[in-house]
Image (cartoon, rainbow, N blue to C red):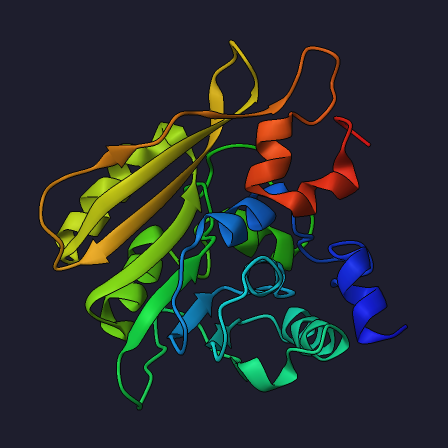
Length: 247
């Protein structure tokens, strides 16, 4: 498959761990939510198979981005390397096999961080099969504080953090952001259908940012018939691969 064919097929065809955590639409939404500028350098914490960063790169015409993918699971990291090469982004990436709680970057501080952290506290919710899936969903190998703390270490003043999380844990997220000098500046609630509770929230925070939070109009993914809404496809064209709910 050529690079052009692989890009047109995205996100289908991505290499993913056979028995590990497999990316879902929250990764694609986060990649579309992030806003970056030419020449920026950033990190993808807990990058998994690289879906978030690849969605960002494929959804923007911004040039000369550099991304460090940090991932503890070796199988997932190998998949991320393969996906970056297949999609023609090998030169954009530097991959590190390390726990986010210990990761430090020796170069200049970063302009942005992407983060799809474990959503749930240990012993909260259904346990995933396999260690890799549990680590991706539950705060086992890395807590929310570990992820936010790592982002704060990496970011320069006025650097941007883009995170996808659970609405039910927004208070915990905001507490950790404030504790690490990160101010929430933009928030988007994502709803499966109109009239139902939000299951996903996207947040942009700025290091050393002041007060002032913009709450965007809610994004509804599916209409009453289960088809992807035009608003969802405009926000994240990658969702066209799953144009009907459950497809």
